[in-house]
Length: 303
View 1: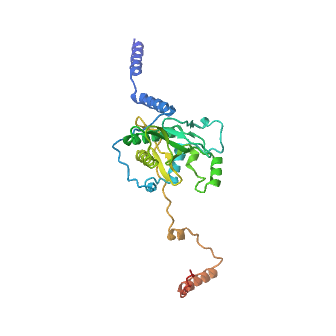
View 2: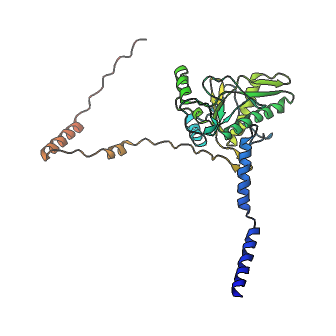
């Protein structure tokens, strides 16, 4: 009877725990499935434009003062959120975890000479979000006009970078475009979909306002390039409160060693004998006590 009672109690405990739901496990599974489904959606966005957002002061031809995320900061984000550098072009980029970009309602891919239209899935969501936010900002002033942005550069292989560096003196070998997280967006050319015409200057301002809002939302880093584009790198995207990628911590600047520290690091000089050490000390004292020579002023060159 005791054995039967023990078995019945164990069975009751098992059934009790079987019916208990673990919300944190179920939420985790739902979050993962939600993230995967959104990242797989070629039209997914991760942010809605806030009409009450107040952008920073944007002065014509001085956007570089606002969009000043330099390459060292963007490169940290690109390396962590993206892939390793690809040595050459491939016939199948999906095996590297990349997704293809195609023209859609938010953007158009221009003719690419030194890059290929592939990004990591989170960067594609960022690009869709930029295009949609730009259209929302445009619609606030011109509700009947519809335009979309133009992407001018995407993923670059090492082969693409080497060719571009030889041709363009502004290009860098240590490029964020190698990691599938970075895009260039034209601020001079846009694609008209429908409605009345809007000047290119106004559309550049609308795009700048959209990028400033998404930059403040920690979604992307932005650098204003004087070669007709915004240079944008993925920072993080949030899907249902879940951060898909972590925010980037800017690299710490290495402090230059002081002269005292440099002197401390120098190894002590070794002498053959005590006489050599005394002679060296005497020479050093003579150098210290010697009068300083006055430097003669050279005549300034003729102009």
